[in-house]
Image (cartoon, rainbow, N blue to C red):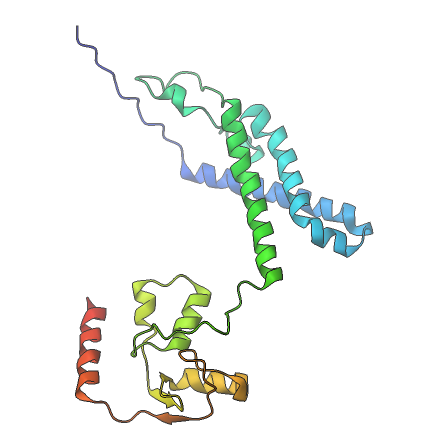
Length: 237
């Protein structure tokens, strides 16, 4: 006898219902957080500022314990008639139509660790990085690795706003290039803005030398023109 395992029919859930449940959970959390801050309004402001990650994590833990851990559904999910279930128990044929299997304790612990512990750890790491000023650019760090056709100031601004992609790199090319006294080229708008903001204390991003004057780049040799054409073709592709 040949046994055939029927594939389980797909479980279809409206994405709009999931989104509404998440928004309802967020609204409830904001309401409870406002009440929590009112409770600690009589304390010194430094107390709330120092222990804010722990207070928010404790509030999230209480909400999680009274909702998902107890009933398998959050407050917003219950209003949308949704709940979490153990999909491992519904992997066989015709198993997705049976009664929903509840989450195991290990699944509940893992879900709570990711949704509560994850944001808490990230908030603490972010505060530590801010306190230690790890996000500030080291004076010894330079952008001498960049190609000559890339403006280091544009590249630095792109790095500070978002992760660089191929499209982002193409937007950092030199426009109306000006050369500094150390021999490196920047966009005129970028270099003028930097010199106005930083004054005589600004250092070249490529070599670290103090920038005192700039002059317009008028002439290009044949190799530079050929390289520009190659980069234009590369950007179009």
